[in-house]
Length: 499
Image 1 (cartoon, rainbow, N blue to C red):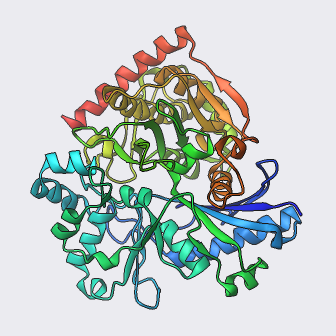
Image 2: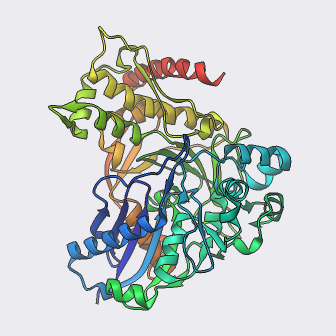
Image 3: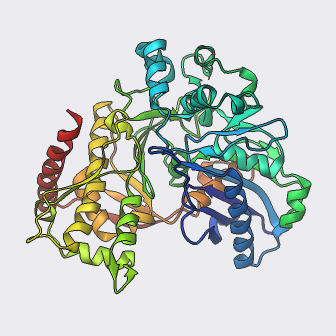
């Protein structure tokens, strides 16, 4: 009987599932839930929360829809892999029930706690041992709960990342990985273990930590009740878990020093792999343990993240209308292409989705610059928005280059903003590197990871037998010069906010 692998991608917009044929490495069916974006709770400015059980409900819906599309026998599924939105905080009590909504990745309330920790622990310690300032990551978010919600904190049994919670719902086990803990800034890269110094400083009980498993390994076995609900065999294994950006790189077979991945969904990311414990002195980009790191071979991912990328394009779609209905993205792309490179001087700063790491945790909001009522149209606005997203990625990419990271090509899935021809053109000509688009996505990558972790694939080469390049873009010298001029105009507007 053909073996199948199930991958789940737990995003902040939707939950996606992909079913992969283990013999071909190809996805046979995918589905997502909900059809539109999941809500975020924002009780106060800069806050962003979601209900973890909402993720689970949509995960079940997506799994069932995927199975219905595939028409396979669900008992042929051998292993499950999980990709998830990074840096979130989920707290559960002794009954393994959530104590509060998850504080998710784009929530910026914990910035002061992370900044204070960096000062008190010492910048040298944070950079040399943690490779990052605690900033606005999971550890700082847990400190916020300790200080502001003591009635919640006193009930905490375990903290976890969003993917850990989905694994808990599947298995009843509380497990995590070193990669996950590194993205929460709990990991000491020198001792290759959890940072006792950080735990002591924040006053966290070490018992709060989940059990740590290798990324590629059997983390747990599915619960019988869940197996019965979904029609699975009860011996299905959860054998892979990774944050969405390490997983995106993995799904693109970006595993070696000098290789680079990109994505542009709600947020935008460029993720470069290095064999060094590299860090940015200002923590504007962040280093985490990559999925294939081992005791004998260092593999880290350096991540630059722009919070406001696809969400800007989505906001424009919702708030501009054609005959009372939102434009289709394809129509927006076509309209944008009618405006010239540089949008006749119109510049958009896309930083309207929380504090931005590349701006040293400042929250400067989104803004439009140079708007001329007699010159600019919706075409210019749509183009300036896409260019602004690319220019913000370029600003971060220059930080990566200053750290010594190099790349000859960037790989991405053909999805989200990379579906836009204009975005792809602007990206390669502004970044200055070729782009390869591949037939994969996060959920498919998570399924492939499960196959590796469960031993179904003998090695990475076998795992990626189905990965294909389905499109490519290369820089054009004349266009690159025009985009460079537009980028300099954009950067001058940014300098008004970050001096």
